[in-house]
Length: 87
Picture 1 (cartoon, rainbow, N blue to C red):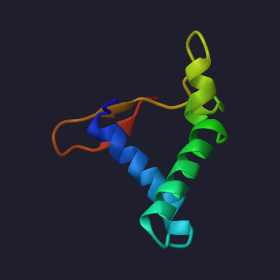
Picture 2 (picture 1 turned 90 degrees about the vertical axis):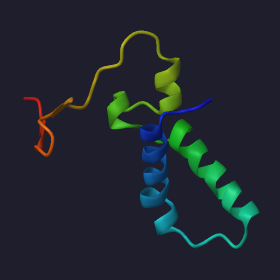
Picture 3 (picture 1 turned 90 degrees about the horizontal axis):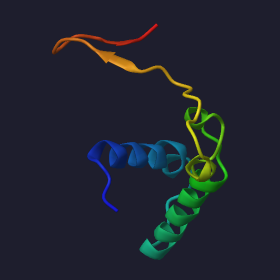
Picture 4 (picture 1 turned 30 degrees about the vertical axis):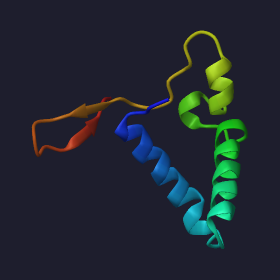
């Protein structure tokens, strides 16, 4: 499955800030792959997300109907303008 660049960048940022920078450096590529798999499993199956109404991504995916939105949409101004939240 191919994801948009913005999604891939978001996932990489989460991996770095929430996990990689806080733990010891893996000794080899196999250890790095195993740790990445463990992190992704935790993130998708154990960690509740505010944007998913405090469900894990796996629970949100299996939920039927609309989820309550827990974030504000962004409004983008003119080029070079500031980003503002909707009221």
